[in-house]
Image (cartoon, rainbow, N blue to C red; front, side):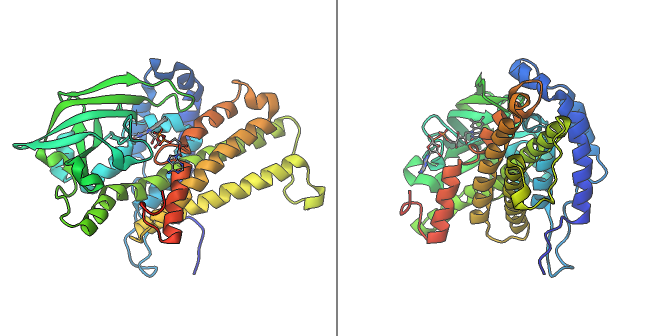
Length: 400
Ligand SMILES: Cc1cc2nc3c(=O)[nH]c(=O)nc-3n(C[C@H](O)[C@H](O)[C@H](O)COP(=O)(O)OP(=O)(O)OC[C@H]3O[C@@H](n4cnc5c(N)ncnc54)[C@H](O)[C@@H]3O)c2cc1C
């Protein structure tokens, strides 16, 4: 039986995080958008403590069984939480200590001893390089085993939280001649000699969050800091699957990034309706199509687009929780939600006219923040390419 309602426990999480977003994040939005990286959002450390201490924590995870083995686990909990926190502010959400993109990669493989040794987890994810953006298999950073240590060399750019995070998950190749199968990820704690943050970017949106360039110059980490399986597959077929190992991180992280767009779009729609009401424009969603105003028509359209993206995101996360192959769904959710968030935020600016464009309101900021969600963790075009490959049964070399 199909049930599109959120489980009760997640509804409780949603309500709590909406309150946290409204009372904790929103009042800081403009301050840190204007301050960009000149000021650290210090208040976030206190807010993060509140988040960690909240009574519903962990309620997203339910054991398999009961409803035919149906499981609402960490992925579903994370997309619902991400959307609610991004309803508050995407930039501040990204800057929250303990919510790093690299966290998912570390949590999946690290032992309890490693987690204790590495300390509180706030891990950035460093894949992109000057010559490797959409084509992440083209990375040139290398990792060479010397004794009991990996020696990392290379340059990473546009690393979200690269400056403030406590650890960086670095993608590097064990042997560039073996292609993508030799790519592995490594945990590099901040302060490790040889890893330097060399630049922090100035950006269109998500200005509260830092985006850094990182150079690795003979940076040594213990052998155990390679996350996952250190072996390089022996046969060509096995090597093709082996890259899946690192890429599978995306099956979990893409729905979470897509959820950011869902939260942002909801915020833009809610604020637009509030501003219209303030201008005496009451929306009546019971009117028939022929009686509807142009604005109502636009809002109907946007609500439908929003709901489509939201359901795609929930499905992709639910599939991950239930160990169903979800690469296609993860990419669908990211492509749809990224585009939807961007279109909705810009349309809301348009509908609200001067109030939409002025810094007196947050709509113009939502519009600026929305574009990055359509870009990072794989652009919309790349997600569509992945979906097309899966639908047509083509490999990455057959459909580029
Ligand atoms: C603010 C910000 C934060 C970021 N955070 C991180 C992070 O935390 N970690 C990290 O590793 N990276 C991060 N990135 C990098 C981001 O993931 C890349 O920018 C993205 O993957 C695109 O790569 P690129 O910029 O090199 O563009 P390119 O790959 O050069 O692409 C340029 C354009 O061409 C299109 N294109 C490329 N190939 C194809 C194709 N085959 N078919 C159709 N269209 C194509 C793309 O969609 C895009 O529109 C961040 C980027 C920004 C701007």
